[in-house]
Length: 96
Ligand SMILES: [Zn+2]
Image (cartoon, rainbow, N blue to C red; front, side, top):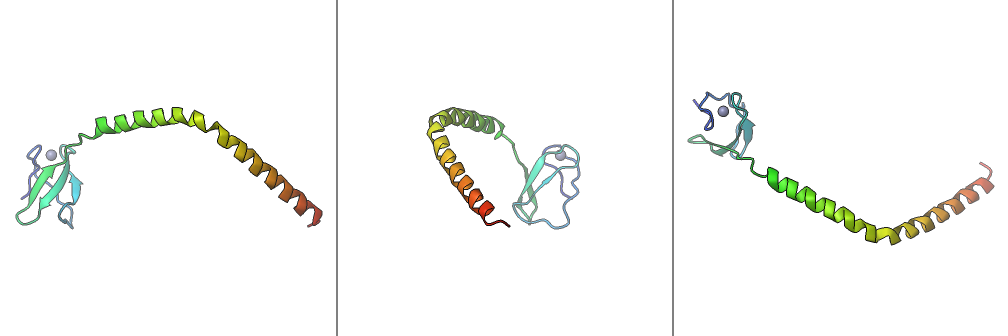
């Protein structure tokens, strides 16, 4: 009988279990990873990446500030709009 390495409670294992599969303990909600099937070895996945994700978000915000330098691109978009208008006029002349 498999037991949760975190809380020691009996685990209800998924019907199909493969190595490196992850599932959640029904008692403590810890995410468990299958290290080995025979014998069954489970390890709680330590979710320590939270701080790292926040760091990445900070970096994204800094990147967003850099976007101000890309204002020149808006001129290209205006040119594209003019081209679209020309096409619309042509279609109008066709008298659908
Ligand atoms: Zn548990």
